Length: 280
Image (cartoon, rainbow, N blue to C red):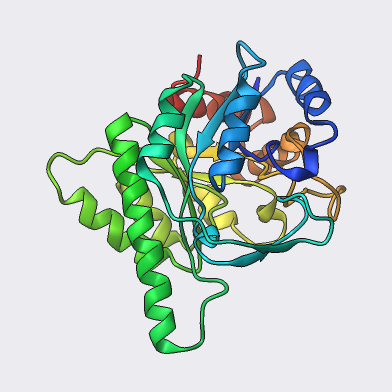
């Protein structure tokens, strides 16, 4: 069995065949966690779980890019060309209620920091970063209150994100587990996340970036696999819609890099996912 710890079957890219995709995923003994990026997609992830007794789970959260009025692609939203979407303010109680309504909500995510499309003006940049940091902290607090792990998105912001987590961990009462999904940092940054007890998630990005050093060095008990579908499809499906069924390509590459068998990687990553997200 495999577990795709980060999928987006709740996105527009799967609106016409989501249940067919899930059927072939489950038929191939792959479980999935659908991850929200705003309230709409978080609710959709929760709604999908209601059709299944086992194997389909949800994470809910507000992605940092949704804090600003922004253009998102047609894979996420309904428009064929993508469109400007209004910024969403994080509503703590609204997300808390959504989580408490369904036991299949296994994490708060995806949350974090994303400085990829940052303002060039210094004053606007500071406001931009401050809003992301404050919202990230609010969602960490929600995860702590609900005793749920976090799924962290981090793009060109690892140092700031680590500072926030370090500050939190200095509190004697703070306990948090989670995964830094689609990890793209360096080994020094990876070590800091690992030292705090976090897992690192790997997907099709490993076919685009050289992350071999990190994959080799990461302890087996701290590695997770994911697709981030519909994005980051592995060869030979690049530039096509990704889906959980292609998780086997991630397994094969990690096995090659770590000098393990495919079966060993399957067993290791499945046990890790079950332990972190308390899947039943």
